[in-house]
Image (cartoon, rainbow over all chains, first blue to last red; front, side):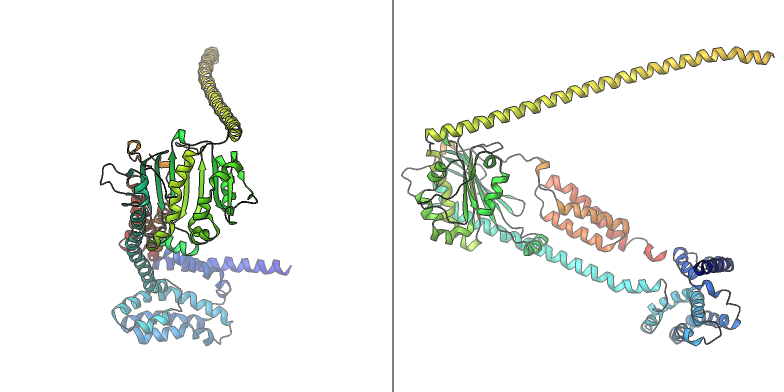
Amino acid sequence: MEKLTSLFIFFSLLSLLFLSLSPSCVLANSHFEGFEPELDDVEDDDLSLPLTDLPLRPPPLTQSDPEPAGISSPDRDSDTPDPVSEPSDPQSTPSVSDSPKPSPTSFNYWDEDEFEGLPIEQPQEPVQQSSKSAEDSASTNPNSDSKPTSPIPKLANAPKSYTVEIVCGSFLVIFVINYFTGKRENENIALSWAAKFATKDSIFEKNFSLLGVGEGEDSPLLLKEGQNVFKFYASGRRYCQGLLATMELKSRHDLISRLYNMVVPCKDEISFEVYMNDDAMDHIIFAVARKKAAKGMQKDLKDLQRFAGILTPPSGRKWVPEELSVISESKEVAADLITEAVLDQVFGEKSFEKFGKYFISMHFSDQHSGMHKKMLLFKFALPDANNMADISRLVALVPYYIDTIGRYKLSSQARSKTETARSKAAQEAYRELQNARQEALQKRKAEKKKLMEEAEAKLSAEALRRKEAKDRAKQMKKAMPKIKMSRTR
Amino acid sequence: MSTQANDPRQPSAAKPFVAPAVNPQDLPVDYSGFIAVVFGIAGVMFRYKLSSWLAIIFCAQSLANMRNVENDLKQISMAMMFAIMGLVTNYLGPARPGTKS
């Protein structure tokens, strides 16, 4: 009940206040044409807060207090900015404490604020202008802080805006500088790789008759794609059609991804794709990678998923180190491909300690999806430009495996197994293809049917319309005489 | 490994390099360009300086990562336009409508 009554009182007061305030609002609006939206806010605040004070206004003392101050301050402000603005401000704050009048202090305070805020806004701008011209702004600004309206954000904005520009501008400058330095870094790495492995008397020069991406003798060795991808092409070797090495380096040229890479580190990688001749590769599906990566590969890559599984290391034989796992179609293939020489050179205990950190994965398959089905994939990490020799043994794996696989023939037993698996897969693929084709056909048929139906519907709709028109005409005809009849009556 | 008796090279089998045709849809998505466009539009719409500046920064990133000139330049130029437009309206436009009202 109490609440209700208080609410009632509140509303009655509100209505009273609204009535009494409305002229003042109009006045205020007429004074400040440009300030409409903001003033609305101010008024709203005033509406809700000083509700109670209007009835209390009659005491002439309280009214006289703020008004002279409000009026006097602009006047004097225009004359002499600082001495008056100081008095006017202290006046605004002390006024709360200054009012020891019978009426409650809070009401007085709101009352004053309301009336002070409005007239003082006018003087404030002159003050600001004058402060711009005169150097007394320091004294006036802190005072003006107590006032609620526009000048404050304006003043606060001025220094802030520059920080944004300075930060962004300097970031851009650093970005540009980093672009050029990072670009050169990446180029250095790629060039040092090419110098190590693709120049005269190097491993690729000895194995391939054509090096480089262009035609002719002086063709460029590397093809640059973007700022961090370099491609190297070689061709003219037995057992294979060509080799494409793709170096994917860190985005050193890009400051943002460089910062990102500080959090999430990544490596420079080089991947070799060797396109084998169709007659030079038997049914081989074989992959080596680190344990975690091998699991992922087995799940994600279609050929490995379909034909191969992760092998358990055989006992009684030298095998790849524990960090690696081998995925293969059969044990026989894996055993034949991981030869003594490979174990000795790369995957042995000692050598893997040295070179293992640069090894990422190998993946040989005759069932790759895409244009080239028979492909050998090698993935290594790149050392920095000065230590390129660290991966020379790994790179030597590439021609070695081309030869090994080119010569390799499956035993008849294994061969029959793989052949059945492949024919099964081929059949499934064929069936799927046919299904897809049939589905497409059916879809097309359904679409055609739909079109026909739509056309028919349109036709029938037109026919209906015509019929309706006819009916209407008939009815009109019928109705006509009636009208006549009524007229004649 | 390097002990190969005969020369493995076969000059007759050499095939020159053919750059594989890449579908424009297969290209990696240019996130920075997209972000730049978003920031640029936001900067113009809300007259927010920082947003326009960020748009310019992401434009620069997109420009730095550009691979295919014809494909990417469209988006980048659009983002650039928005960003610059935002900055121009911010600094040279009608004197701060935000404070006027």
